[in-house]
Length: 511
Image (cartoon, rainbow, N blue to C red; front, side, top):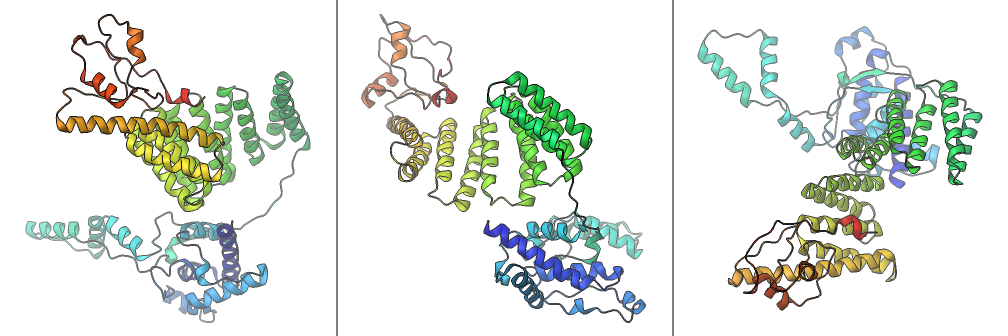
């Protein structure tokens, strides 16, 4: 909250300072003024003393224009910003008050408040980004364009080859400024308006919601459809209120187990939100997230994953990854990958969620413990029981300290920790025996074959002593008995049968 409040105060203060510079300035000087102010505000990591790039020919056409913006320095700009913040919000800020790593988010807020339309490109806010941008630029294309612009031509094949070699090896110099006048495409007016709301449509929607909550689904469904019809008739199809109605209705229908209708309404919410609120609106991102979850609920995990990843890219643009809601989104991606049996990728996403959670909420928070619990599951599914046991131990420790011994999360973590510990001990013992050459044939996988019945033993009796291949079953036999079974007894049959999958699934354990 503090970061968002600082971002809002600073962007609004910059808007007032920029307006004071632009108020009496001819429009032709606006790009040079805005780019210079942005360089002093956000581009000091690349150039600590930026200079204004004003066209000299324009100065000759406007001899009496006040070009005081050229004298603005980062220090003087921050002094004016601090005065605006102190006057309007009674809060003291310094240059260090700008949240680190949020330059792109601050640029977006400033653009929305000033009505700036900028060139869509990767802006370099520090020297490392400038170097990476220069290395990624196609050097050959730059050299070729420069050659054509200069009118140079060669008749010798050797000269052509040499020029081509220079074009491939030469790279453009890194930029010295973050913003240039040509990056400012347009200034659009910011219009504030208050759309009237239909009380009748809202009452119909609220009545349908309450009827469904009271288990009167028939009446509730009729009222919901009536509210949707009223929204579309009063506002028209393309309107933000209609998009919100689609979003709310999709959530209600999904809760009523009418998943196909929920998916259809969620798609309409995405389309209308993009066209009326913008592709990077927070409500548009929420519509994408809901659509992804609903698609996943209907079994279309591949499409759901695409929607969630698209929403995550937009989320990084608006808020950055260091946001509490980013943990949930990254977690959802990991779960979807897990349902597709892409266990390695799922584990990587759980690790990313854990890194965000530890930075945002702290290493000893319940949120971090929850992600640790899910990461332990992912490691177990990947086959690394030892690492899973370590992560589950950390999660249980946090749950026990923060929630208490009798909390459901603590008990569940402890039960799973015991399972992983037994499995890790058995695996370590088996690997030790393999190293000493005592074991002749041991193959464990995620789906362990059923034990072959011995002479005079039924298949059911043999299955009772089965070595657990998953993490949901704890074998009660000792290590020596397990090793005896693994090595095999002389009376055991040598015929092999088709392997059958592990009857336990991850979803069954969490009932």
